[in-house]
Length: 257
Length: 325
Image (cartoon, rainbow over all chains, first blue to last red; front, side, top):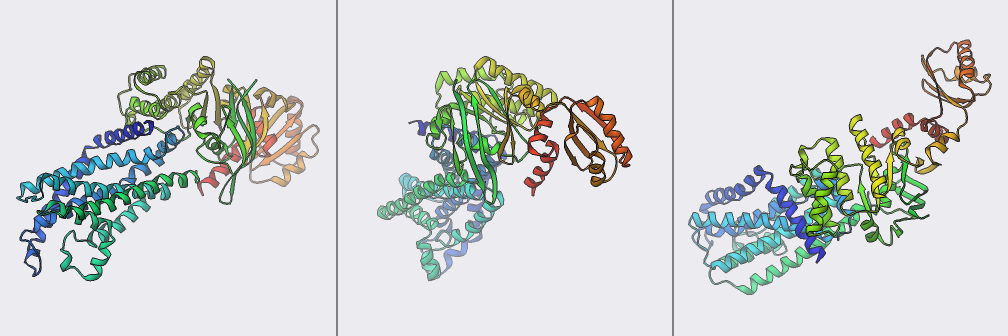
């Protein structure tokens, strides 16, 4: 109970910090809209490629943009941890009797809130430009859950890396190194039938793709719920593993101070 | 009489660097104990080990009766820590900072709110409580750090370099606050500092730390009394003239613990007034020009000089350089 209350208190703290940076909030909200509109325009003729199923690329794109947004913004979650390390805030937390995992999960709570709000903006924008979600409210909710799970996993990894590397430059390097390849080694922008075989093979093991496939399956008509639950299960297991790794990373940090 | 802190043979290595080299000392309950030494002497590492942030490689330590390695949670409940690097979250208000710290210490609801208000009032932060800490002055941030360290009513308070970087007036105010904490709350306080006068003013017992070891321990008065006679400091006016100075001083009677560091010459004598003319005459006869001479009762500076074999200012400079490299 104490640990859960600590988690909540730390989530509130991170949300307050976010709330006091209006420019950051503006960017967080506007960026996914730009992705959706820009990619939707840029690639609208993709549907003309022989073999592409379905007639509307924007419809195809929404789950991809939703997952990409969650993935991108979560990768930066560790930056707050580096700031805390530099300011001595982490040290102050570590000499209280609080458990270690709330220090990570509290931050993941803030990240989840951020991804949730971004998802709502994307879904609203998609509806506004005429995208229809045939999977209904439940389908949209499942799509958002897939994005949340993926975001949680990568936010946890980002925090683990922050505690081990303890330098902004290292974290920025690692995040930018991973972001685009993992996004494009997936079916976020192109159907599986149309991508090279090796990319499809890699994508099978790419958590970003798990979230894209689960999200797209959930959002469309005739959802294969078995597949959605299966991929979400994989994502949840991945998220738990990353969170445990991040909690362990406090030991690595403490053995260096 | 019980000890609030006991450290015995602490050893801590960072790679090839030995930060603590068999450091031992103990602190009696309800007293202010000063850990005094130049930058890089191992003071902050000692605090990290005693506050369970870092683990020593060898040796053992207990705080408030609990072993730091085996019962870290109990230690953490009994201590307040004001680290050298402020732990203030600059994006939260003063009140939010203290409240979160109390929460992590297990306090809740009305009890927590009352305590937070009381502390902010006590430390003169009540008016600024609802402003984000980014807008605080250095002294205010330091007081906020102390409020966070005290929120759960600890028995032992660690103050790591609490006045470094503060203006003289703010430092004086901080000293009064520390004295009040000892008098009113009966706290045991471990204070680390590289300001001699700070240890002299605040601490009833002092351990002088050099290169990861305690080289001298006692009350400031005892330590100073252990150096009989008076301290003579001569500032030479000229280039490096080591050989000349040594030759010149060999003949002066009653001159002890002579140390030459660049242009500074330190020594001790029984009677300063009588020795100074002899010292000056000797230097003059070897054509060593002198810029300034002072004679004084031994200070903690001289105690450090005596036990560490180098002057405090010099050690502070070289160790800082090593740290920056």
